[in-house]
Length: 249
Length: 245
Length: 54
Picture 1 (cartoon, rainbow over the protein chains, first blue to last red):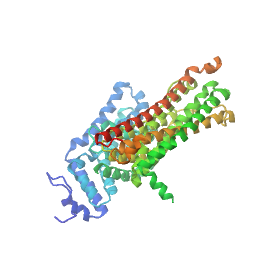
Picture 2: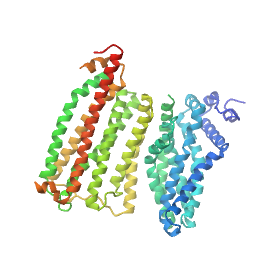
Picture 3: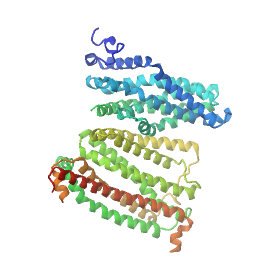
Picture 4: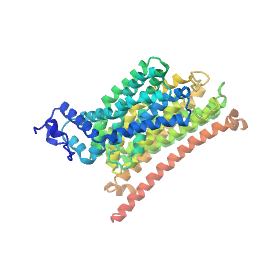
């Protein structure tokens, strides 16, 4: 296998480590692409890991009609909040597997030592994470919204809002996950670190969903969500890389 | 010339001694200003025409809220300095700030609620300022929780420093989004003081309290810093002279 | 004096607010001094253990 070729970097069955020389010689873009491909490949070997956050999202959504009222007309008012609270919690759950396996099998250290920009690799990992968690959530959310009384016309709006909103969630979450790397039972602490920073996403996202349900234009809050996403893309991978280095020292 | 001063501030024994000498210069003026502010705010200032004597909570609520933000910013700044220049004393400063800031945030929340009850008719309101303050409280708790959860001091210092810097970037965003959210959902229920511009007799005690609390923070920080520095430098040779003093 | 304590009817809110704030101030002072005292004691203990007591 040629050095730098995808096959030599992607783990063969039973071997999880990334080959360091391949990462070292690859260009930044190639390295990022390889890290992304690796994460996606590994994730599809463990489908349960992908399904669990979605199942959690579905169950939490189910809680509210049972707790409040089966009447769709009443649920419609709480739908935006319930949807986004559930999405936030589901994405928190999904953060667990962002670094866990890479930290335990030494891949993360390989990344840090590879000479490649750790920021770029963090960005690649977070993109993979969003594709694996945020995007499925975005595709499931319209159904959840309808189950909570939203009209079918709201579905595209909900999809867009959740798709854009989960981007900063994955990015902000990656910082918390990197800071608490290797800590046992860090779930509660990770939530405490990530949730306050994610609240603007919740606020704008819920507003967008509310407008979508009401049939109004969701442009303004979605633009704000987009701004948050851009800010997160610019700053979060840097902070996550710094946090990973600190945690690995 | 300036760099010598900067480098000396990075030296734990120097800082330990300096902090001891500086503390009275913060503590006594703080006590005087707070006492003066109390007299001015509770006795000399007249009742507000709308809120009567109830508005006097301002004289403890506003300084507490000011403290919560100022201390967080100081903490983030010290953390950034420690992270960038790898100065341990800066990390000690950040660590010392957190409990002070968190407790004053709590004071701001409680005094805000106590002010809210007679004015709004309810102890809690999702008013933008109180909501932002509550979120700030969680930011402090997260910082302290992260520090507590990491045993290695160096990792704790640097990890919590990253968190503090990320947090401080978020504070204006959170404040903006909460204010925006609040303006959508309810008529602005800002705590009104009779006129937008306060007369001097009401304003001066407020300024005295704000300044007094700030100096108090300085004193508290200096005392805590000495404790922190000492705890971190357990086996250093300068300790012997320092503790026998 | 009565009027002062009564705070125009708002006494139940004003005085607890002041009490809480000053409670926090006192707590901070005590806590900070306790931390310093403990650190000093700990440092002295360690020096004594190593036979380098001042």
